[in-house]
Amino acid sequence: MNKELLTIEFRYNSRVNGDDKCITKTITIGIYNTIDDAVAAGNNVLEQMSDTFEIRPGDKFRVSGLFGFPDRLVSNSCYPTKGVVYYAKITPLSFKDINDVINTIFTAKEA
Image 1 (cartoon, helix red, strand yellow):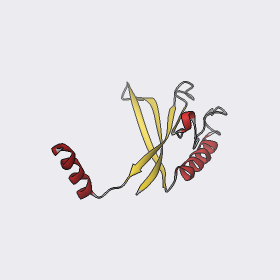
Image 2 (cartoon, rainbow, N blue to C red; image 1 turned 135 degrees about the vertical axis):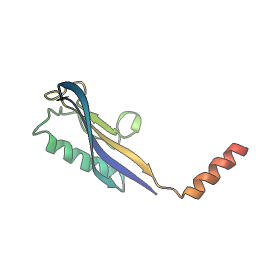
Image 3 (cartoon, helix red, strand yellow; image 1 turned 90 degrees about the horizontal axis):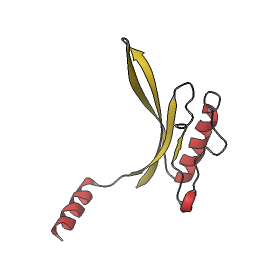
Image 4 (cartoon, rainbow, N blue to C red; image 1 turned 180 degrees about the vertical axis):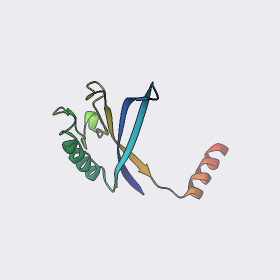
């Protein structure tokens, strides 16, 4: 069974006890059955974030991007907003039976 995981990671520097420290916070938006659903949800979240972050018109998820593959990453890493960078990401998830995976590994190793 395959699913799509939609997350957003925020990175920023924070002064803690007088020291600059890089902070990373990742939130999960959802797990979706199809890339189409994940893309739609991701673009909806980007639209919501546009109230706070500068999101350029081309910064969006696509089901069919360059070379026909999905655009699974949207980021403002080149244009941070007030020193905050975000990485919105769709990650494919593959759920498999652990015994099948183990058997496949050992079968391949013996070949």
